Image 1 (cartoon, rainbow, N blue to C red):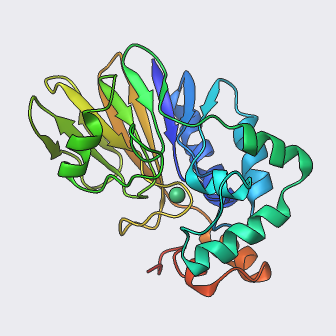
Image 2 (tube, rainbow, N blue to C red):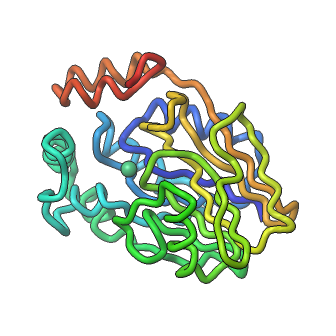
Length: 248
Ligand code: ZN
């Protein structure tokens, strides 16, 4: 089975379209979306509609989806994320609010080999940054490959009997991770809409459970257009500065 894996799209339509165009050649059987379709970016409704119209897609919610839908408060967000999530909530139509509210929470079992979650299989709000984090989170995983997002940092942690190791930090994309020979994996495809790992390009992954590989991809997109829309929407400048080749 070949899975296209997307996470943290964050209402970035240009990045989402670039990823879907690049993925069209990859012959994925199914698409897995690990949450945070909205928040930060200028196109929450368009991204939501686009993703939910994908054939054979399984989508779980992220913390931004949950807060934008009004299911929990935005108390835990920093002021910039708060401004953006309140703007996002105002853009939602009754229909998109309904589908956003109904997105299931992870973790979710996909098949005999794969499960997905937003932050960690323990909690959708937990950040898995380090090998130690991945080891602790992985102890709660119930499948050989656990796909997660939330940090916006692409990488693969291989888990042996007693420790996890970062096998695939950022590199020249596509970077192929060979899954055979390692007991279990925690893999983050990176963020489509707002990467925070030093590479501004939209990130995604292609997991092939038959070939036993996971490719970490990056693709350029029209970030100038995304920034233009964010300025027009008067989203916080600091969020605009996180988008594009000169992002920080
Ligand atoms: Zn996110």
